[in-house]
Length: 191
Image (tube, rainbow, N blue to C red; front, side):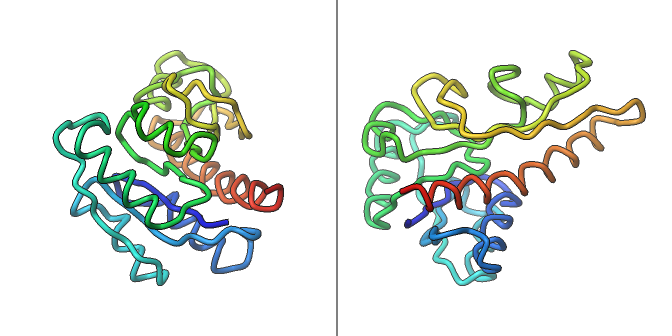
């Protein structure tokens, strides 16, 4: 299963996927390309570190969504990579129908809450401010409804009395790093 990772930031979840691949824990999945919408994103440096091509794709003209010419460029790049699965690992753009239709049923996202609770931006902060006792992370298929696609798996994270927003964030990131590679491996075996 050929996997393409899309990300906008430092790439800690992409690094977890690539480390799982390196250790043989990614099943029959193989990351073939990393794309970022940010030219200086840390995720791009992972390419050289793990021996995977990594490229910036110009997302213009919009800042928070993938639409228009930027969407066309991303569709072409992912098609050229012959992706069987597109993994959104910190990709901070809303996908529009053109991209979703081009890769229907092949796009998964990692979200830092137990969906359907706390969708959208700042899932960790939303849970923290609501003072819930349990939050976590979710891997789900991407559909037109933001963070509303079918759930593939979740990991719960308890919020302890001594936690701070920073410590909770670290705990959720650790859960994400464990969950996402497992889901990808499972999908590769069930193809």
